[in-house]
Image (cartoon, rainbow over all chains, first blue to last red; front, side, top):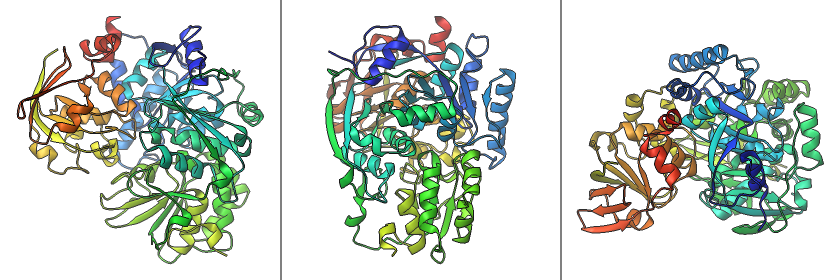
Length: 421
Length: 162
């Protein structure tokens, strides 16, 4: 019986020739990540451990990104705690405001995540790095603390679901539509405890930013991780961004999968997840009624990358957001921000009546920078539309791609760019 | 390990960590402060009604969403002695074990037990007893490895003992 890609990476990091689904293992970690919400709790837990500092100052990344620039005094205290811990332990990869970005966009860009790695992060969207062929998964603060202290974590080796992607997505269909389609198909617990292994010839038709978006939302199907094979595009990305050595693992031909799905990307349509679960999906063609909205958010660890901003700008160029619309654009990192400026995208956004913010998770989790009032609706390129996620308990979030979000900002109701002309 | 005994608060599928503890309160990591807002967006009365030892019962995928350990911390600090569910989201499952909040997976119990029932959970045997309905259910026992973490009352103590 063969192993999946995830199982091979875990076996190698546990010093074992072979692992199987359900087995409990202890694996060596290549990177441990935390943010300004989860790290303070982890730091407190680590102080209780009989340990002399961190296991490796180069293999920890601390990224204050959720409530920064500090939204209030309490957040400032949390960030201060993280900053002081980083200084005391001489953490190489601490990213202050000015260098920081949204963690899951920032770490690949800084070359800290490469194929073959085992990465844990005290943030559920840590699964993003599967796009590069790494095993990465979200954990809580205590696991982060143990990881920082020992460089190890325990895992139950996951079973897997295989998604065979074929075909080429249509214009206005992106990675976001692919993953929303999958979550709509298998449900928010459809991949519970399992790895989502993407494969197939259609992957060649997905950009790296598409793949980051898809892997990012594996958690929204309950998955432990999402993972892509390492192809030329992924290698080129790693060579451009990292000096670290990567290692390519491939699934055995006789690897075991609990389920297998084939998805023809050419048949997918722009897809929207209705309140209050990411599985409540409808294609743009299935939305018959006018759903009027008050706000659009384009950003987050899911869709705040350069491709996303380029698509949004393409839709907004020469147009203006609807009267009364609040359109908030958040480039995910400083490098993306700068590139967007050089390409003139920021000018397009501002001329269209949108605002552009410094990198922050802010509105995605109802922190700040775009909180919704009672009864308000938002089309958002973020990852969760739970009750109260972006503000008032009686507000609504519709998850969509940057293309749909930008078109909706123009019309004031959920729309596809194809409906604008 | 001491048995849990208390009255039940019952919830449905996919109770996410955003409703367990909304992010607007995550500028604090103080357990008492987090507990004061526990379940606020799904059940405003929860925190006024919950007593020490009470039990949360829910159906599928309890604790889905964000990895915030603040969620099991808030539940534990609110006085809840155990969470029973059909299934748990995996990060919540890890976090609960790591901070010493007892949780039990038992689809039959999770479906049948109703709000207000008095329930007892024996962690040594995995047996769940609904004292109100006079019914018992066999919950899933933890693997030996996790029992060691729970017996040490969390991952930090477990690592310190190693």
